[in-house]
Length: 113
Length: 114
Image (cartoon, rainbow over the protein chains, first blue to last red):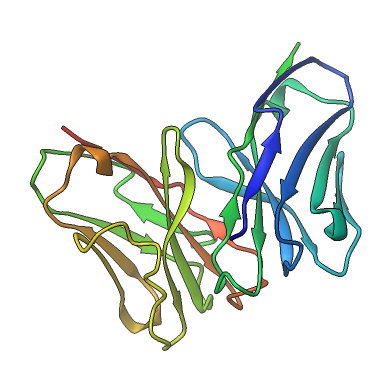
């Protein structure tokens, strides 16, 4: 059974720092891995989706990498801003999941001005 | 609309009452998912509709939960005889192509059972 873990559970950094959020999964047979952002009281916003055949995806200050064989993904945020404060969730989709995503517990990020 | 919409945004009900939650997916998306986000439980899958296929109900926690999708578009999640442990945010997502595609989430319905 696929399990997704995110470390750390919470992170506080000063504005301008570069940071890395970690996601690990137990079953490497995945279709893709997706990173989401969730603001308090809001739904999820998709940030990046990495297909299993890809190594990384970039969008603006965000870079997500995928190492399928080791069951790991990282989300790199460059030059963090207070507006980046949110909970970041990773989720995987795989052949034994019938299309449903399995989520990690999330990392709550706080960027201090 | 441009994104997935859900209604109501908030629902407060008394234990034992039935509730209906609505989801309008992105137009043209064939796949629709319901998830539940509880404090301390994270996000968990409930049910998945793909086109005209029979839905995947494997995540529904009990027979008090049911969902339907009419005309391949709007979906309604019904919870009968609500219990306090049903309190959570219920999130709907849609995807253009089902498995392997990006899922786009709605803002959710916050359900509180008193």
